[in-house]
Structure formats: structure tokens, C-alpha cells
Amino acid sequence: MDRYKCFEELLASEDQHAFSVVAVNRHSSICVVAPHGGKIEPGTSELARAVAGELFSLYLFEGRKSAGNRDLHITSTNFNEPSGLSLVGGSDVAIAMHGCQGSDEVIYLGGRHRALIDKLAKSFKRRGFAIDVHRDPMLQGSDRRNLCNRGRSGMGIQFELTRALRDRLTSALGEQTGPTLSDFVDAIREAVSEIEK
Image 1 (cartoon, rainbow, N blue to C red):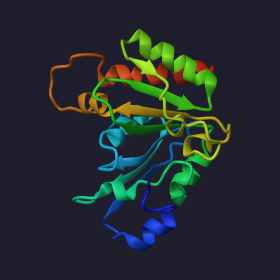
Image 2 (image 1 turned 120 degrees about the horizontal axis):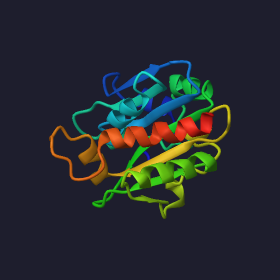
Image 3 (image 1 turned 90 degrees about the horizontal axis):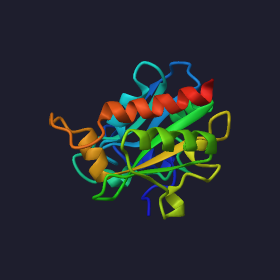
């Protein structure tokens, strides 16, 4: 259960240094978001930054506390930090990076944009990633109120990435034992480009 039901509750209780917000509007049709970034769901900010690059708009809500960052988690259907809502609402499609538990390296694909989900699944599989649908309906990103579905199209993408995969993709260690961060970024950009044609 979340400690706070909305951003206003969080703001009223937490120190101003407990979190940070990054909102970069590149006036693109795609917005990459990590609403549970920083120390809330480690690795999601780094992956969102890598995918956005200089190409897509970027939004990060990041936990910065020395401990207790899970308290800053606002579920995606209730997420209402103003600059995040504005950036997503000004984009056609939002792609949300989330973290879930798991010792296997799995990408769980969700959201309401079925055509893009299909393209992403094929693109990831070609590069050797394991793809699945999360068993928990709450982690499937299908609710219309979910932040990823609040773009102009009403359809977005929700990634649930296991801790094992996030840790490896964002590791500073040089040796890779599977598909790389570049493969992850390329898979998403390839799928998006096919949708935008």
C-alpha cells in the first residue's frame, strides 16, 4: 500500500529535498517517464534517460532520501505531479519505466497501445530479451487513469522490469552477459519508428 494517495499528500508531508523532478519537453510525440525513479525503483531513471536521449521528451520523479524512498511511491493511476501530467498530456504516447521484483531478467510489457506492444515484443525478442505479461493485473498498465495512458492517444506503454535486468543494464561493470543497454534502447526506438511511419 502507498503511504500517499496523491502528490499533494506527499508534498505536505515530505521535505523538499526528499525528491526531485526532471521534465524535459523536446516537443516530441513520445514521452519517456520514470514516475518512481531515483531510489524508489532503482535503475528506472537511468533507463528512461537512455531511451529518451536527445530524441524524446523525458520525465523523472526521483526519490532522493537516504532511506525510506518506498514512501514516495504514488501508484500510476493516482500519479498527479503537475509537470509530469503536463508533459505526458502534451505527448501522443507515454512510455513508462517501472521496476518489479525478480531474479530472472524479464521485461513485462503492458499498457493500452496494443500495436506498439506487439512491435516492442518482436523487437526485444530479436535482440535476445525475455518478454512476458505480468500476472498481476495491477502491473499491466491497462487502466485508462494510468499515467502511461494519459497522452493524447489515450494509449501508452508500461514496462515492468525485473530487478535483475535493471541492475545488469545499468551496471558500470564492463562485461555483459546478455543483451546490452544499447540493445534495449535500440529495440524501443525501432518499434516506435515503425508505429510513427
